[in-house]
Image 1: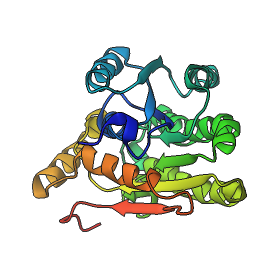
Image 2: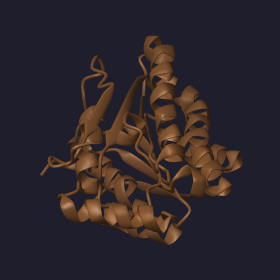
Image 3: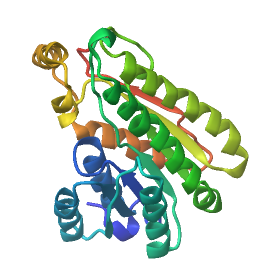
Length: 252
C-alpha cells in the first residue's frame, strides 16, 4: 500500500464540500489515502468528525469545517481556514447538493430555490472565492454534476436545470483559467447508492427511484471517488475535462 507521504497527491491540499456522506465522504477518504491533506466541509459535524477519525487513524491529515455553503460567510470561513491551516489550496471538490425531484406542477417553490442555491449558486461562489488560491497553486477544480446535466427527464426539471448549469459554468471557467494552468473537471454520475434520494419530497418520484435501484446494480460512492482521484492525479499537462460514469446496466 502506498504511504501518504509518497502518494500521488503528497504535498497537495484538498477541500471537499458535502463531505459528511456519500460521494463527498468517499472522495475525501480517497484523496487523503493518496497523500493529500484534506479539509472536509458540511453541516453535520458529527459525521465529519467520524470521517476525520478514520482518515487520521489511517495516517492522513484532515481539517473539519462546519459550513452551510448556501451562506457566503460560511464559504469565506471555509476557504480561509483551509488556506490558513496549510498555506495553500490545490484541489477543490464541489460536491454538496440535493436532488428534490418532483413534476413541476407538484413542485414546491422553496425546493426549486434551494436546489438553485445549493447545487449551482453555492458552487459558483465557492469557486469564485477559491480562485485566487487555485491560481497560485496551479490547482484543480472538480465539479460534481450528474447525468441529469446531460439528459433532462420528466420529474427532474429543477434538478436538471441546476446540473445543466454546472456543466455550462464548468466549461466557461475552464476557458477562463486554462492559461493560469488551473484544471477543471466535470464529474457526471449516474445512479449512485447514496442518501441523495432520501430527501425527495414527492412520493411518486421517490418510489420511482427505489424501483430503478432494484432494477440495476447502482454505483457505489467509492466508484465516483476513484474517478475523481484519477482526474486529479494526472500529470499537470493533462486536464480530464469530463467524466460521465453510469452503472453498466443503466440505460439513460
